[in-house]
Image 1: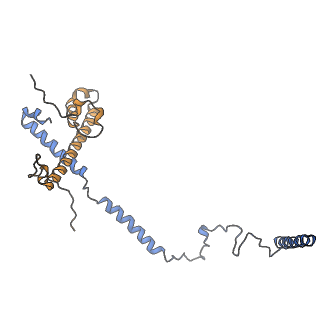
Image 2: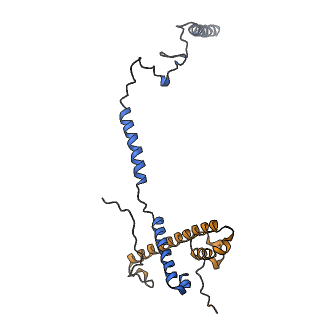
Image 3: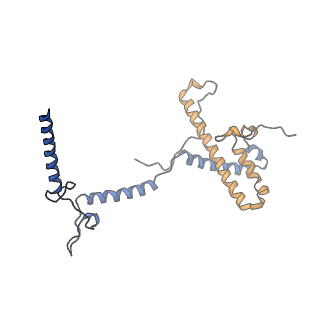
Length: 104
Length: 120
């Protein structure tokens, strides 16, 4: 028995899955569902990583964190859209998918 | 009726007399003890008298396999659980997230105007 030191998942959704006709290929549908779950996990971990960076930025920059950490704050808020539990108590514009506002 | 009452009283008195006689006297051990009873502890650890001078305590038959098994258990768990590979999906997702963040940063650096494209 060879011990595997790393687990590997396919990063692409299954090729033969048709959203309009999900039950045409049940196996592809299940694989697509697992793919969605993995994508959500990656989203969660991304938000965690940015949150850790933001925490360190606050500590390092000290009193200047309002200006210096602004980009990380924006990035973190974007990363937490639709991620995690307890989204009901957040304003909709912070957790719904971002609406593309046409700039002037 | 008088005769029956007198007989019963006599029987009761006889039984009480014999009981009192046994309680007071007897062989001196008392009614609360059993053979081998010790009145007070001797002071030996684990109630085992020390071996004669110049000799050491002999191991009992259960001690060798018990000690060997315990030692092996500690070693196997200590080494094995530390060497366990991390195959949880959290770790996998963490690594993937780091890779994607790095790719986004590279894309943002290479294409100056692509900063807005990174937003979801």
